Length: 456
Image 1 (cartoon, helix red, strand yellow):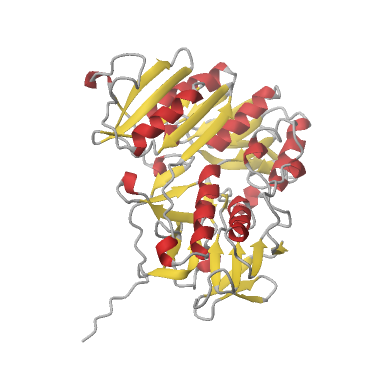
Image 2 (cartoon, helix red, strand yellow; image 1 turned 45 degrees about the vertical axis):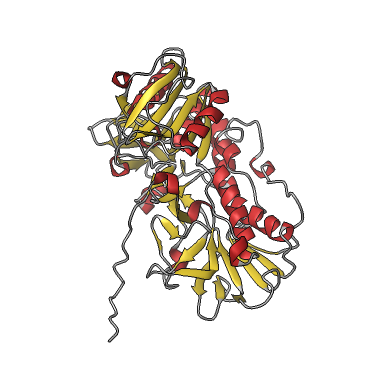
């Protein structure tokens, strides 16, 4: 766009955390033009982490998790009307009600949705839930408060594990099924997943690993009553929560010519979207869970993240770059980090645990359930995970940022760290799991629609 980048029309598609923080940052950075925020849900932006924790426990209402605004972004909010198409040539967004919204610059922040149960008829049974939105959380919390005899959770990732934890805290019987060898293995690797499995079983969870649910059963009157398993077993339950990971909301971009696919929308470190030929755009930006972006600490592979902190940091970078001339733009280089509270454990991570081949237990013990594990790849530190030891994480973050050697040197542990103490990180292919990792190196995702054009 010619002229002052602080003027003109900006459309933000996505009215959740990333969209809100981007809108606020645009105004903080001096944008004085027209700002429109489009969201598919009718609710103002709200916080998602409490949904699987406080809301399911009955400690907070589903409609009481609204995100506080740092400032009024002076935006036109188009809520409850999803975007259904994008015309990048005419620079306009198509809404579900048929209206076209023109823009000078566009931010894509459409995030993810819960992966549904693949059989629509079974998914429609009364008692079958997913958990992604505040409406989902409200309905599930109401059902849990009614005291079901057993809850079946399909998928042992962070969401599934937090749901199971809430059920046990409520005193409910719960069964968790996971295709992989243990819960959380897709995010944390084999060693810590064994700890997670032991903790769940110690808290009374009926944990079934190495199996899948082959069918959800109804009672003939539309109510869920149980499930059949791949090992021939059956689980009788009256509530089922499908926690099979997330789906990127990119379908509305199918004909837009962008590098958008199942793993998200590819962009450069400045949050500018790539088109399907790998050419960077200058008027379409991406932020949050729907993005795939390169990071120099992880061999410039494209990262897909589902983390609260990344949504905030990337939205702020994208917004800054949308209203700044080229030389003043900055890259999104913050380290991935996340946390989870479940079964009395406070789990925090920095870096990319799946980008590893070895780990070392640097502090504490598995038995004490208080520890710090450092991850390494090709001789350098790439991630760290703490359990009930969060104060140590800042130190390990510095090691990752400075590409410190692995195993880490003196000061990083409460014991000497010799090479013979390292263990394989046991990172599994996510295709072998019921749950997907919350951070993934997506590598190369070719678009088969491409054609090679040779000029004479």
